[in-house]
Amino acid sequence: FSNTQIALKSGYNKYLSIDSKSRLVGRSEAIGSREQFEPVFQEKKLALLGSNGCFMSADEDNDLPYIIARSSTAGAEQMVKIRTNIDPEMVRRERIAKSTADEEKGSLKEAEVNYVKKFQSFQDKKLRINTGQTVVLESAKAEGRLHEVLLDRRAKMKSDKFCK
Image (tube, rainbow, N blue to C red; front, top):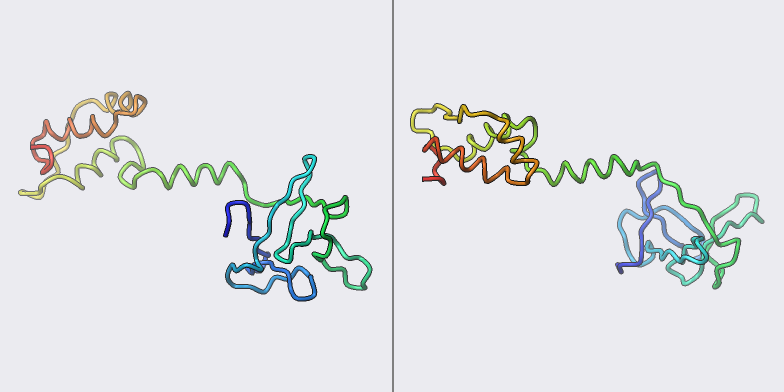
């Protein structure tokens, strides 16, 4: 799988490929060499190069029209528009959520409790949480020093096994 090639999935969760008759079909469960397409851009338009070295276009001559890959050059009939139902904003939010540690999800107070639970030694089975202002945590998060401030707050409580 090269950096320039893409794989396409059908609505039935099968990978699209080019069959022996140069038709676009969706039967594959996994990506192989036949399931790879290379997008080619010409004059701000897109053509898809199939695994057989030909560009895709519509074959409307038959009773049942097919998408075929038979043209070795990309002309006006081989130019395609690809639409997707993926919301880019939702993808961005999911990516940010994945990059956020589980301990930091929720409010800053909940994040502090989660980190205390993670690192504190429980001799008497009681959570020792700094009762100081959470405003300090908010400014530290804005400055990018949240972990440092949380560590300092746990060190002041002298119950963290990593802060002694």
